[in-house]
Length: 437
Image (cartoon, rainbow, N blue to C red; front, side, top):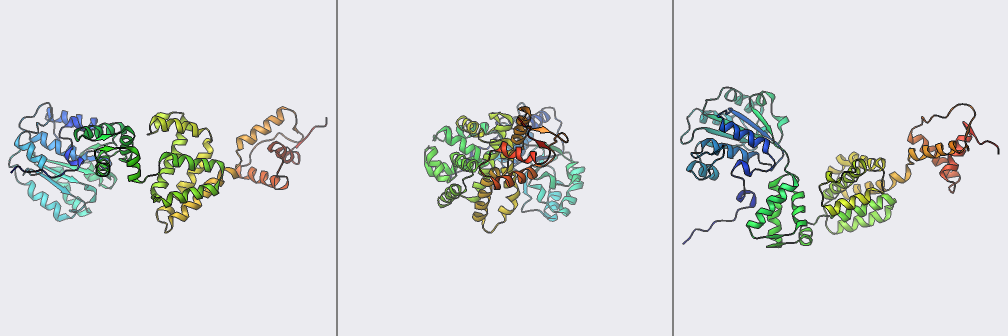
């Protein structure tokens, strides 16, 4: 009876096995491959970067390449016994240690004891320490000596998502490589290749959504793809996927920003509560609103839609929506969200806090007069001769808040007066008079 293979998630089944298959990390892979070709191998390396970008994968490929019997141009063959055993995790000379769960001094001493013996099958003995920043202070101290003067057959590869937590005494003994987030385009191509191999149909909108949710981590995107296959079957459609993930779509945030721009606090609260009734996650909503305002600010400030990680349709939508705001208005909205970020994460009633934040967002721009608009009105009146200085030239030295108070005071007296009339009355009473006709 033929042996049946068990199910493997995409992140394991399609893990890169050669340097050339690793996405977005050309600087690291080319350097390591050249080091192998020229036989200039350091005794310790540290790979840092976000989760899911290939740190452990590169470490394993490097171990295979240095122990491969049929090495070609710095790439492992993936066919010899050594390569196959390292791929399966059964090679006697390649040790992997998870420092998140084995972080004590005894675990490091076990490495020291194993390092005393020559390789059994390979040319080099490898120790791959994942999440090395989790080691205790005593464990780091125990590692110092062996990192400084290791045997010539020994290679350490340390991987971490938080290099700032690794002591400088450790960092200074290693060649350091910083891995970057994987580009959305490359994640899309990778998911598309997996879908083709698995005979899964997936539309472009779904591919883009999966890649974006990966947030620069290919492993996370592959995990979302696996979930989508489990729910949608062999034909992934955007509407079904969006319903499954239960995420607010882009149109949701365009509506929210329109309500904010109109100052319509009643409708924004009603709409927000309808979203909550649909089961949307509050943290996801908060992050989505923050990203939405960031995109608006980018369009207003730079006019460069290429800086948005969105489809062309959504980019054009942002360009249209950005015309309703000024740069200062969006900055005020972002400031409110940033100031509330800490409170939101630890709030016992996030829904109430979000509602109050939305109302504040609706009010902030309607209650603040744009100083540049007021200056333009003053200059226009001066140019037309409607304001004549009698004591000294007028200098605008008041802050936005002070001018706003003055305008509000005049609005309380005569709500129907225009901005130009209010400014004329303010300055007539102090430094200006209207010349007699």
